[in-house]
Length: 495
Image 1: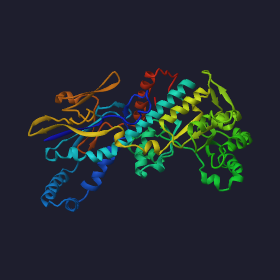
Image 2 (image 1 turned 120 degrees about the horizontal axis):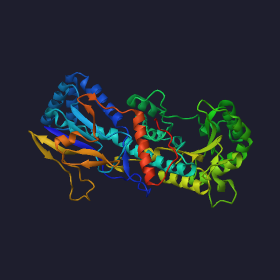
Image 3 (image 1 turned 180 degrees about the vertical axis):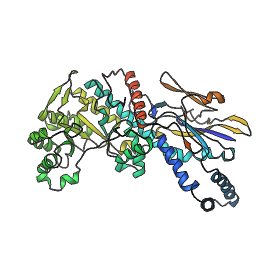
């Protein structure tokens, strides 16, 4: 007997606020999830004494159900599984870094031993909890990447710099260290700036990147406590000491609204101009002081408030104030590029809609979009659920006593959204899109783009991190081409 099930994104509630966003799920984190799931089973089940394991299972069952016969039945099933010595399932998936339409499965799982036919859907919960959030957050990160790349290409002619324009600020708002680390790789598939440093370790552990590959980076950055230590009267001296004495090279970020943001930008910054321009590049070739406001409406703070007094700092916004002091150059497309010695970053309550508004306002005011970096926090990466993409596991085919049955879920009270795929399945790539074929023959199911990743305790066809990111870049090209955005070149490719 054998059960085949799939994991599928059924619909999207994630980026609907952006009218021109073509909704697909960006696949990231599957390999990491499978690694951790099967390592966990090995550590807490197969590697332990069978009698001890079954005793623990029996105790748990008897504490949660009153029927001893059912507990005996389940324990016998697990004893058989323990004797096998590994999880007898085969798992196929589409490539990570690629995007898949709603209602197209990206993973299939089936048991390979008839005596543990229950195992396929027994693994549903752990597969779901380990996979859905990284896929949802990768899809959201791709939304940010699309917005920022489009704006950069329209105002500078290339995607250069966008890899570092969205910075992961989410860790302290996530559901613990493991959650932040495992889902932080979603951001890293689309960007390189991150303060979730542990996510870099996850990539290195599970995706075998080349030693020279830049997975993620951060910069020295102050927080309000640092600015507060010497008090408001010595704020100027605190900022001067940090950028001149303690971090005289490279990039450093200065939180600037502990008390009065506009005083920092119109009083301190002009007085520090020579100090800022005298700073030396680090090994990356950069020497930049980034000013970070952290309160208020991001669009109005960065781009300026048209309702404020004309010519006031509030009217000009952070970018306008920095331009007044440092200037820059006007590029071939006619947009002002802020001097590379300074920049801005805003990291409070950023959303895809706000990212689009900020880049649009900068463009309207004649600035290249790369004048500011956006800190993407837990509002984007924690305020999500499985239902954002309705990532769901459902059985589609069962073989019982040698007879195959195509399974389907199709509730009469539903609008068709929950209708599942049916039968043996195959996913093919047709004109750059993944297309589902149902009710396949065994021969048809063997082909297609669903590639075997795990079988009977062994991993196959593992993906490198470089390939994941290259796949994402390919998907980005497709989307931007549809939006009639034609870059001179793309940045961040590993070729």
